[in-house]
Structures are given as structure tokens and as C-alpha cells.
Length: 274
Length: 199
Image 1 (tube, chains in turn brown, orange):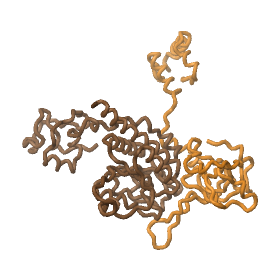
Image 2: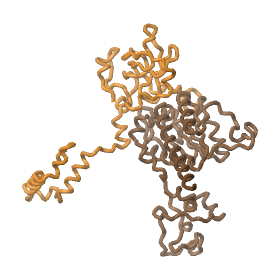
Image 3: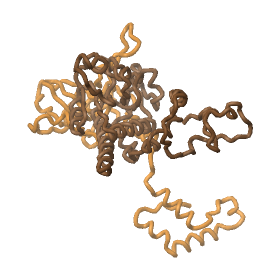
Image 4: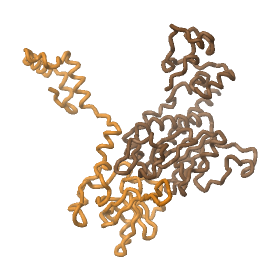
């Protein structure tokens, strides 16, 4: 987690964030480590200056978010992720180095005899983050769209989505589905609140057009990126194998669990309100 | 000295006879040379050390990968592997060998009908992935399949007409890679392909 610049850290005596004494760099004042501060969420709405700072340092807006968002793993999905299981589901297999996208080098454990291998410790970390995000979206009643163009896994993706009561689009993507929905579908139309890509590359080898469209419409995306995929424009990345059926089925099971937990939380809140 | 104790024998550790044994050994070792040895301290520390070594060791990904069949396989060209047919389209067999991609082979003209979905076959692997750099392109072009030659059928599975069972099931998830370790440098088939244990 990044350290905030000193003029953005909240003072010990509850001083205002942009107090002049801080800006002048007063000597002898202690800095608070943001990681140890666990404050209760603040009920007020942040001012425009704070929101502007938040675009660069989103951590300062954390305390203005709701209670569920104060914790990283609110839905306790960490025990579900086992590296041994991921290994047996073949999540660590990448393509060959000849097809490696330079922007995916960070996710690799290395290369062995021309074959890229994903670091599952990193995959677990990113997967946990993505699953929690999806669960949060589901708990807010968000629409989730599953997208893939992999012929072998297409049917499983559609079935998983249907069983959850969510949506899937595994066929040919019509250009402008999200950006030009008014013309193609009609108005008013509610667009998906998040899109999960089980594979970010189309059968032609190009990035899926829905990635850029979602970015244009400010729809957060979760994408399973393989070693030959471009991670650009995706909000939550999951560096893992997207070509093997076993790998995709494993991920679908986890997404299923995350969404189920999110929806059950929403149901509990509804029941409690009544 | 650390004694590896398994299962029900662990209860013995806290018995008084065992405690006396440990203490007597400690006293026997005391002397000028004992200064170089680490002082066992309290008996509880000794018990904790034993418990830690007999508990299930959490493997890191690095350890798992180092001891995987994939790493043992080494160079893919020429390796004899077993595979399971997961899909069949007319003469084309899609065989899962435990790697990222399936190998696509043609069923032989003779007894080709025996190669049903779910049967085990023996293959000679050539490549993990068919990807080549073509002139003028920055990245390789991939065919998304492994390259292997069909050798023979190992286990025939009788075809069950239960609709499309291949697409929805992941049949080889739990067992992991199913290829044998031995290198076949000469001849066509290894000595006893069926006897090679699967992981």
C-alpha cells in the first residue's frame, strides 16, 4: 500500500487535512502510518477538493465509503482459494514466450523451455480482490455480464450465468452494444454494472471489443488475462490460464460462490429491514 | 535428535516415561561438549518442534511447480504421454494430455471406431503449443493446440449415448497430468505403459 504525502495525512488532534502548519512542513510532528489507522466510516460527503485529491490518491476516500468497504475481504473468500487446487486446475499454464505480451511479464513466475508459467501466489491475490469486488456488486443488486468467445467454455459460462440469474454474452459482439445501446436496443436501458471476461481475446486473436466499450461507459471490468492478452482497460485483472476447460470451470465455481454470497447478504439486509 | 513420530504415537510424547527418557539423554550429553549443542530448554518447546514437523507442510507454488510432472517432463519433443479423448468430430480426436492445450489427432483407418470419447490413448508428444513466428509479424501466431502423434489405444471406453457429456464435465481435474516419466528414446512403445502410476 502506498504511503500518502505528509500534507494529506490526517493530524493526530483531528486537524483539517489542508492545515497550513502541515503544508509548511512543521518539524517534530509525527506521521501516522495509514495502514494502522482503522477509523470508523465518516458519514459526511467529501468536499470537491477532497474528491479531486481522491482521483490521484483514492485511499483518502476510503473512510467516506460504507462500512462493508472498510475491510479488504468482507465476504471471507480467502479460505476458498487454495493454491494446490489452482495448480491442479492448471491455472498456471501460459502460452509460449513468442506470444507473450510485454504488459503481462509482471504476472509470470518465469518461463520454462519456452512456456510461460504464472505465479499462483500473485494470481491468488488478484483473484481474491476480483471476487470480493464481484460479491460487493452482487450485494448492491448490480447486473453482472459474463463474456467469453472461447468455444470450449462458452456453454459452461452461459449455464453458470443463467443459474445465478445473471447475464452472459458469448456470441458475436455487435459493435456499439454498450456505447450505442440507445440505437441498438432502445431507451431507457440499464447497462451491466460489471462485466466479467473469462477470456479477453476473440477467436480472431484481437482484444474483445467489449473491453474498450465498457471503459468508455465507465463500467468496471474483471478480466482473466492470459500471457498473450493485453491487460489494458481492465479494472480487475486475474492473471491465469483462460484456454483450458478445467481452469475456466474452477474460476466459474469461484465467481458463482462470490455472487451467491453477495446476493445472500443483500437478502439478509432486506429481511432485516422488514 | 528429533524423532519423527506419526499419528497415534504422538500421544506418547506427553507420557512420563518419555519425559524421563528425554531428560536422561539431556543429562548424559551435559559436559564440555554440551556447550556447543543447543540447550533444549523446556520440554514444551521440544514437543512443539515435533508437532511442527509432523503437521502437513504447506507447499508454496514454487515447490509445487518444481516437483510437478510438467517440470519433470522437460523437453516435450519425443516424450511418450497418455491422454484421454475428450471430444470426437468424425475422424478428429481431441485428446487431453494434462497440459494447457488438447492434442488433435486423426483416428486410424483400422479400428478407428474404438477411439471413443473417454478412452485412454498413448501419444508421442512433439510440442506443447503450435505457435510460430511468421514473416512480418511481431508476435507468434498460435493454433491453440498441442502437437502429438497417436501411437495406440490403451483403454477402450464403451460409448454411452447420454447426449453431450464432454463439454460440461472436467474429467481430469483432480488427478492432474497423466503422463509417464520415463523417456522413450528407442523403439515405438515403452515397456509397460499401463503400469506407470498416475499422479
